[in-house]
Length: 361
Image (spheres, rainbow, N blue to C red):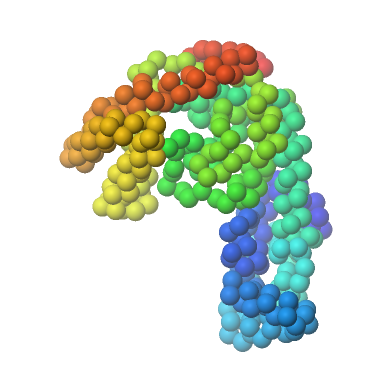
């Protein structure tokens, strides 16, 4: 068995990690496959940290044992034991592979469970992720470009060497880009991206990456700088599909699917409210670029479309504001951005033509 230092093998296998750091640390950054079962909660950790600064490590350790004792210790033990039984192939993990994971390992050992830990903890895994990303992005990249509704994400998803950056970021990269899944912290997003690239590369003799032509930010997450730099050098294949086909894709993605997703998560009544607010927020976010008068006009058309959709289920009314939004805002903006990259465009064609061309590269 891995001694807890072959970080790539651990990441590649989606190895379950029983992460015993405090919730606040876990939220700031965690590995895919990690389960947060803290030794100390945020308040307990803060108290021990203060004690450490004022009275030193011995007093801090004593306070930690005092805070996590009796019934509380037993409750946490029960959770760790259950996780060990469910994930016999897993590892314990704390911040640096130090005291916390060793204490939990010792307590488990005393209860008859022998469970390994990650040497160097989350910090060592994080360092491995950063190095991994820097290595993997050295392969050539082909970017898929095209106006909104060109099916770029689906095209990337279908490639054996494709990595869906928007899927990993839980965001579609525009003012209407949020999904029902909240975005991860920046570090967790980077960890997930590195593992996705590692898995993709391990399945094949990888010659190049296929990615969507993204900006620096995808919602609140930004792309790692090493990847961003390589993307600025990448060649671009542009999908040019008819306007009507793009509208149908957008109808399906933003009106049919988002309504369905919000309803699934929040129920019928609140789901409708969330869906309606999501569309309003998307328009509101670009109100200054639209001009306040045009923003007011399109919002009025959105309100009419929502009434019709709620009454009849038809999404046709949304075309009344979506078509001008594409014609006046999104398409000119994307074409302007693409013009600046004209020298890097190596292929143009319909969705199917780009799909047929990609495997030849």
